[in-house]
Length: 283
Image 1 (cartoon, helix red, strand yellow):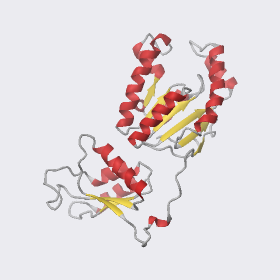
Image 2: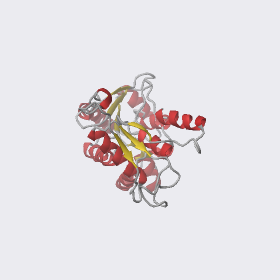
Image 3: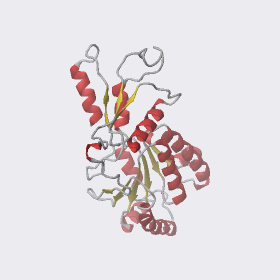
Image 4: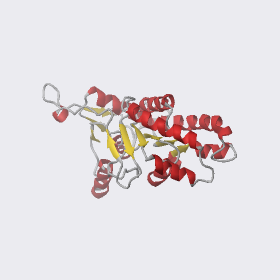
């Protein structure tokens, strides 16, 4: 679970880009908070495509594969942690654009670890980064720190290596929701989803609909709860999702929508299991 030491939860799913010099602890931080499959590491890819993690001759190939993997995972709405130096603004903005297109929140984690500690860790490595190169990286970190707030990240997390030093600040905070999101007539308008022309990517279609509903000012979104499609809407064999699983997906988008079902039949929804499903999605 991706939880900074302050206890504030990072969005999940999300794009998380790590920014910091060699020896700042990015890989260790990611290992402690994410599954290995969720992290895309340039060093690890150098190890796969070259003679080892420090094979700079394999860098071009490693970053080519990294870009492909990041684009594929983000496009599928999966949590993706990019473990590189993160000091290249053009790359950061490209990854941020992928997250925006997929409807994923995007967070940048800045590792502002003291220079002495970075140099100590680097010196202890089997193959340390040359001192002049590391010095350049450390200078770039201070420059990037000022730029991140203007790049449009949903969240910027600063980490200085201390046990309780992670702080999170919203770089682009959401506007406060209107009181109870009511219309000028005092009505709360819910969007009902009954047909699902989602093609080959159901999750992406549902995300797009929910994000559009949130941006349009709907108070909430409701799904149908039927085992098969009903005749008033479409043919019985047309797609219809399992609503509680789908609502769990939508709850992870961090919208201001209230989520629920139009009905939940007691004939095949035991009360205890349904209550637990609802509580899990809410959490």
